[in-house]
Length: 303
Image 1 (spheres, one colour):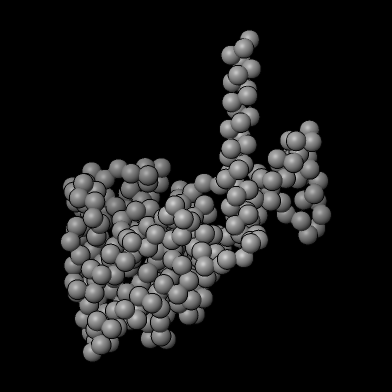
Image 2 (image 1 turned 135 degrees about the vertical axis):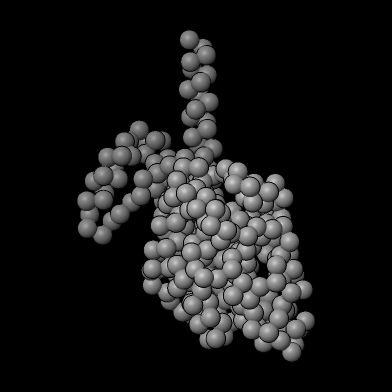
């Protein structure tokens, strides 16, 4: 069986490497020509330089000729989509990368093919993508599932292998077929549900984290304004058996948390939203810290 992993970033490449341990033919596809040339020639250096297990597995599987890289999408039986979905200026999901991949797959789609989407998406995107493909390929029986990634850069391979996964198929056969693919490398539990539930789950996870971080960030601002040590406040508050306040930071970073909550509320037009306001608090915390730094620099320069 030929499996194509589309998008060789911080999720796609490690996923491809783990799949390459199986008996199947694994292809890696990306539109970045320089990236593909480096991957082909064993010269790949990127954000994974701190993850030696990824580098060593990449070199091992490349020498064993288990990896195939290309800028042109190959005809396969399974397509796993791992391309980015940024947020646009209107705080809505930019699905153009996924749209482009779906369009390319459509040109190659054949009987019994399976499409798995891992990219973070707005709710019902998978169902709508399936409907569009079905209009084009009325006489082809194909499958589509949504299985969001759950990784922490710096510990990628371990998380890909050991984290539980949620698979939402467009039909039960889509889910079962996708489960078989993930069982090639996932040691954690695999939960089966619908596409909408799996899409919603991914967004809910990161919105939950954003909201909790926003609370600790706002608490630290209030402590600063009132000349109170926030570390002591959090320490003593967390002694309550049902309280677990996170440590504040300078905002929120990473690929997911500053972006995904917007997808959850992009069609939610209520004046007040905890999710929207948490995003604002976390963005404002960064500005708050910047103001403190600027004031300190001015003090030093005036001495």
